[in-house]
Structure formats: C-alpha cells, structure tokens
Length: 418
Image (cartoon, rainbow, N blue to C red; front, side, top):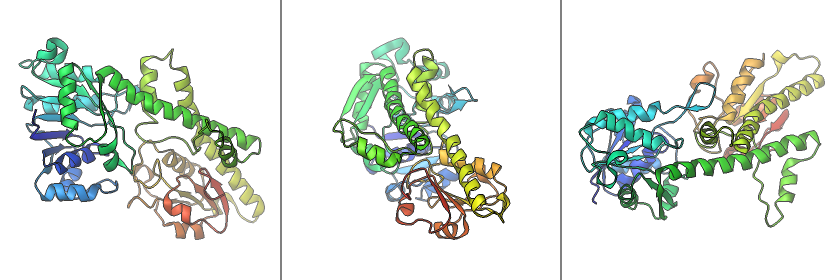
C-alpha cells in the first residue's frame, strides 16, 4: 500500500517528531493540534518544544512543503493519534477523553481504506474503545470489531518507545511493536512504519501492544523505586548511597539505577497506574513502586527543612525569612524542557508555599516561568550560586555537572555535587 498523506493528531513531544520524520521521507503530512500557537509556530518552520535536531527537520519539512499544521483534520490515508492520556482526579483513573475527542475530530474525514493508529500510551482496551467511538460516528463504514479482515477501516496500536533528548534518532532506530486489531491491520501499519523505521517491526495484537508499553515503563519504575528506597535507607544508616550503588554494581549481574527526587514524565510516572487500574488486586508490586517514587519528593522536602535548620543554627542572627533557597532544575529529566509530572516542579512548588524567604528557580532549558510557578523569577546558575544560602540540586543537567556553588548548604538529590 502506498501512503501519500499522513495526518498526525497531536503535535506534542511525540506527535511533532513523528510528523517531521514522515515528512522527511517526502510524504505529505498534516499535523493537527488544538493549540493555535503551536500550529502557527510550526507553520513558520519553527518548533514549540525542545528536542535535539527536531527544529532542523521541521524547518526543512515546512520549507519544502511536506508538513503543514492545522486545527481541523483533513482527509488522509493514515491517521496517527498521539494525544495525552492523563488521569481523572486523584484516583489515577485513566482519562481517555483526549482520544475520544481525537476520534470524533477525524471521523468526518475518514474514508474506506484508511488506517487509524493509536500511538498514545493507553490502558489495555483503549484501541478497541477508539474503534467503537469511530464506528458510532461513522455507521456508513465498517470496522474491525464487527467485520474483521473485511472492514473498511484498519485500526492498530503502535506505542512510541523513545527517550526524550534522543527522540529523532530513536524513532528511526528502535524496534516498533505493532498491534493490529486484525492481521491486515497489523500489516498495513508495518508497511507505514517501514517508510522510516530501521529497527524491526514486531507484530502482535492491540491489547498486547498496549500492555507491552505499560510493562516496559512499569519495569523501569520498579527499578527506580528500588534505587530511591535504597537512598532513603542509606541516609538513615549514614551510608553514601552513590558509593554503595557503585560498589554493588561491580557484581556482574547487578545493575542498580541512580536515585533521584522522584519519577517524572508522562510515561514512567503514569503508565504503571494504567495496569493498576485494570487489575488492582494483582498489581501489588507495581502499585508499591509507584507509592515509593511518589513519596520521594516529600522526603526531599524534609531534607531541605533539615538543611534550613542547620543554616539557621550556624547563623543565629538570621530567621527563615532571611534565608534564600535555590532550586536547580525543573524538568523531569536532564537537558530537556519537559515539565510533565516532574518531581522537581512539585518540590519547587512546595518550597515556595512553605518557605517564608526567597526561592530562586534555575532551569536552563526554558525561557519563561511555568504557569504553576507564576510570580517567581528564573535566574541563571551563576546568579543563584551567589545569592542562595541553601542549594537544592534536583535535575542533573549538563550545565550543573560542570559548575557548582562555592558556598552555602547543598542538598544534592542526584549525587553530582557531593
């Protein structure tokens, strides 16, 4: 099958790179997003997110006429849905409203022979639910859940498996899991991704493809939880956790990850709950790992309170109002601008609410203060090194690895200033 036109619904951290890579293969790409500012930025050949090499590829694709962005979906051969899947409320119940909205948006322009792929990380059964929503909106077309291999529309799930900061390379090089609702659905999806994927396209069914992505991130979450729990135990026992892990990792079959202030990002901090939501009685280890990682920011706050007390004890002429705290890093991982589910953001918010003195923010990968921290000011590292009394290292950005404060008390959650 020849794919002449691809529509990508959602132009965020996955959708835009995916659209750009397809466009770089001389395929006409329609990028769809509800954010008018993002649409306008892309149509100017620019990007609204930080990802190495993305700006170059987008500029070339727009300039050459292979990529355009819009608010309203247009007819295409393929529709790739890459929208958020957040939670409803505080109970970690998956919110599929963005997928439903995307389904309703593309339904009017669907045509016989189209392929619809859900790339959004989703709870098991979401692809089938998307197919139901599309069928309800287009009763004139047939879908795999009722007509199997003979359906008018092909539907598959193909989760992204890329690392922020390396997305443009990993989209091409990584293997892809392809989960079609039928064998023909899978084969159509493989043919599409093979236009740029150099890795292997491995075929399974939609439910297994959904669960594969959740399993990958839950496995990583559990391993990070072990490191984070170990760091809290080591602190209580007066042991340097960084040295401990380095020594333990000398064992040929041990590879403990590095602890931090928690776990962030839209995947690892979210996906395990999708498994818990479907099988709450069975997913005990997965739930416990999430709870350990979710508790780490509070532990960091407690360490900051102790550091503040130590500073005031050493400076009895000062009160808490006179003490300046600096937070280094707001992103959920090094050298990117992505703040989603960031434990560093959570810690900064709590410190601003709790501390009566100034709280300085240092995040070299963003240009303006996030909405959740409105009223605060971004500083560069050198200013914070000079002005702050207590320094909280939250993200191990490359910049912070080459510089560190010469004075004040340090709370280092990443082990690079020790």
